[in-house]
Structure formats: structure tokens, C-alpha cells
Image (cartoon, rainbow, N blue to C red; front, side, top):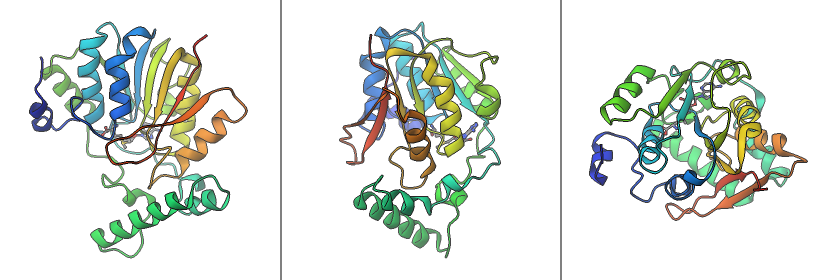
Length: 252
Ligand SMILES: C[S@@+](CC[C@H](N)C(=O)[O-])C[C@H]1O[C@@H](n2cnc3c(N)ncnc32)[C@H](O)[C@@H]1O
């Protein structure tokens, strides 16, 4: 079904017809994805707000592509590593890996959240406004996809460590992927799976490379690509002026 702008709001999914925080990702889907071989991956789906919008766009511009959505669909896996601790933002700043302005924004964001939540101390599971992302289900997203007439979405449930393996069924070739999975280990696992399958000219959108809540994603990305020829680049965001980052695989 074709949707008008207001209908995305009613259905409570990201509006790919309007300027928003995923501007670069949706511009890429609208304008470039059809020319790049392979399917599309979203690592970190939660309630499917961005996934269903991406499925809607792909259905129009590249209906032969499948959109694979990976998540536990029951919240963060129960792992906690030092790289995800908020104190790692201070380390990143003292190592010169994030700017003083970035650190100031992290601190302001925490102060605002502390004020709003009226609590003294935040741990990383409460820094996200959606907690640990338990409030979702694979069935509810499949139902909405069906209602929207989208048959190009494949949801793969489980921790990435089990679903993103060479023996698991999934895409052989990937044209583009969005990582929106917040955590150090989740970034490493998904990069390890996606990068070797990414077509030349393809991109990975790194939602948390500039995050005010999750330091581990940047640490993982830097570790993963160190010493490689992968091209990590900041891209324009007219929405709120934040840095947005992608990594691309050079065309041959
Ligand atoms: C920020 S939310 C995704 C938001 C979503 N893209 C949207 O548009 O609303 C992060 C999601 O990543 C998932 N996630 C993080 N690490 C994971 C892992 N190792 N395995 C499976 N799911 C994971 C969480 O369950 C959570 O639903």
C-alpha cells in the first residue's frame, strides 16, 4: 500500500518521506540501493520503527531485495562488558578519540536524563529511553508488515552471536546495512558478519558511532577497522546537526 506522510505517524513508524535523524540512510535507500547487488540488513530492530519504513521504501525502489531484521525481540542479551560503561566516554575523550564538545554533550544528556528521571545514578540499562528494549515481539512487527502489504521482510530472532554465523540462513550478499544495536559486543559480531558480505559500493550506517549513551559502539568500530582500507566517514545531518557516520566498501 502507498502511504501519505501522516499515515507513518499514525502507524508509529519512522517517516521516510520527511527529514529525520535517519536522513542519510533513507536517502541512500531511495536513491542508490537499487544499483548495488545484495539484500539489506538491520541489526537491532526493537519495535520495527525504522525497519518497517525501510521495508516500505525498498518495496518501491528495489522490490527484489529482502530486508533481514536481526534482534532478540526480547531486549538486550544479558551481557555486560566494560566497553559499554558510561565512564568509557571519559577515556575516549582523554585519548583524543572524541572531541571535548562530544563529551560535553554526553554529560549534558546525562544531566537532562537524571533531571527527568529524578534519580541519582544511571546505569547503562536505564540511559536509553526504552530501557533494555523488552517491549516488543517478532509477531507484532510481522503483523504490521503484513498490514502494510510488505512481503520483503525476514525477521531473524535470537542473539546475533547465534543468528549471525556462517551456517545460519541469511543473506549471501549485502548491499547495505544499518547497525542500531548499541553495544560493543553486538557491533563487533554484526560487523564480523556483514562486512565480508558487503558489495563494493555498499555502506554500513553506524547509528551509535556518535552516541551520547553507548560508548562501546565507537570502540568496537575503531577496533574492527583498524589497519584496513575501509572508508569511515561523517555524513551530513540537516535534522539536528549531530554527526552521523557510515563505513563504505570502495567500488572496484
Ligand atoms: C536501539 S534498539 C533498535 C531500534 C530500532 N532500529 C528502531 O528503529 O526503533 C536496539 C536493539 O538492538 C537489539 N540488540 C542489541 N544487541 C543485540 C544482540 N547481540 N543480539 C540481538 N539483538 C540485539 C536490542 O534487543 C534492541 O531491540
